[in-house]
Image (cartoon, rainbow, N blue to C red; front, side, top):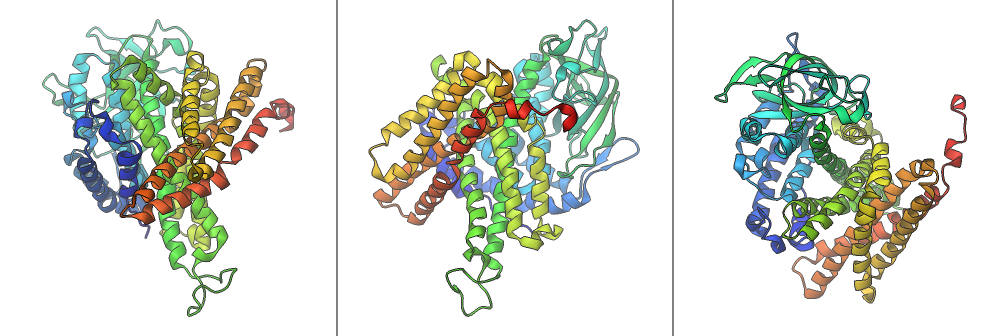
Length: 597
């Protein structure tokens, strides 16, 4: 059976030593985020994930969800009970607004919980995860009346939420959207249309499901400028807050998917269902993109979470399985063979994953802190700075972390050899579950285009300039520290590659947009490498300082340095190849006639 141990120690290292949350007590919720409080929350969250969610992961994948003739859906055995345990303990309201019953704790703690949940049981995590995104959109644009009506019970988990964008003919290109909303005399709207690929669209774990649906009003302009957003509850809500009649909608089918079988991915049919306008007519994308950005950072966490749990299982297997002898001679001559851990290629695969996981965790928690700063920092300048960097890095987190998450889930499966292909070990599930992360919430090619086409030039390039300045300042501040040379040297080279590629895009992308399109994915991965290398350089500085001070846990910090040096020497130099690929331009990409493919 697969194992999972929540990496609480590494999380507390990032929160307390790298980010030093004690410096941010002026931010709402941070006054309570003391080291002791952080440890207590993470330890309790780990228990839920390890003891309640992880044991249901493999069985949930095997059993899947079942749709009944009346359109209702039953989740796998144990899911309903686990969800009740999860919500009754208050986890669904961890970072939500206290005004509506949430605990108001920092996003950084929410990201930690999201990682642990995603590693333990990604399919389960999607139910409260979609709810969190829906709540973010409602909180941003809905009227006070709608907020009061829906947010409290969504925060408690009594009700869950979804996002309804995709239609059979309309995926990324929302301008093709056809679902319509007709005004009614009472101020509500009759919503009619079909939405597909709706995660958590129907299930038996909550008493109501609050769907956020994109639709067009009768007088809507064509294209994306004519889209409005509506709350369409599964059950109508009476004035006293009790549930009324079932709305005019039904789950038409559940998609048969490659993975995440325990999450019900539904086709939802709306037939004049009652809906309520969120925000302004024809301006629905603003609130929905708030939900999308929330979801995209969350999917980035899912990506490295699958790499983390698959790594844990692969490392345990490599330390236990005996197979062959070390190239340098037998390491355990009293046994018939040495463990897999003696083989360099096994270690290569494990170190690729380990060095990625730890840096991705640090980067994600830093971005979570920036989200809080962008909302609540004391000065407008600091809020803008944080928002610029978060906006720039959101597609990088989603695209790079999920590409790497899938790659490393696959290589961790490879560590098992033939046993990795056998279902009972669970490695195939991690690969299949990780694969969707590259596709949903905007396929990774779209993330790369968003990065080079929108995020990079936004506000005159303010975000990328801020990132360059931040990393450059760290490098220059440590250039005379010989102990840091293994980190500052490679980071400086990678940063130079990224800066040169940015200039190349500015000069050649506008002249021929295909150059930007052809180079967008290598550019995104280049920025991802620089982001992760920057995290390793910071972790190395802290580790060196701790060792110099005589820490009581030298092994932890020595292992950080070993893992970080691996990334800097073996992974970070990939930026040179990515730069060469980008600067090759679009000619060869676009040269072949379409009929010749």
